[in-house]
Length: 108
Image (cartoon, rainbow, N blue to C red; front, side, top):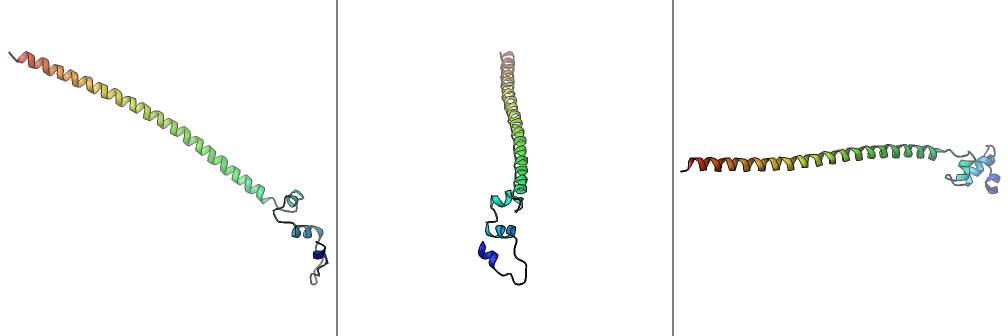
C-alpha cells in the first residue's frame, strides 16, 4: 500500500487513503461494505432474490391447494363411477328377470 502511495500519478493528486484501501482490498470485502466504502448491491440483489423466492413459494402453495382439490374431485368421480356401475348391473339383472318372467308367462 505504501508503494501505491509513493507512485507518481502524472500530474494528478495523490490518492486518498479511502481510494487506496478500496484498491488494495478485494471488491467483495465485507470490511468495505461495513465501512460504507462499497455499494451494497448484493443486499439489494438478495432482497430481489428473496422476493422471487417468496413469490415462487406462494405460487407453489397455491398449486398444491389446487392439486389437492383436483385429487378430491377425481376421488368423487371415481366413487360416482362405481355407483353408476352398480346401478347399471342392478338394472341389467332386473331386465333379465323381466325377460325370464315374460318368457315363463308366454311358454306353455
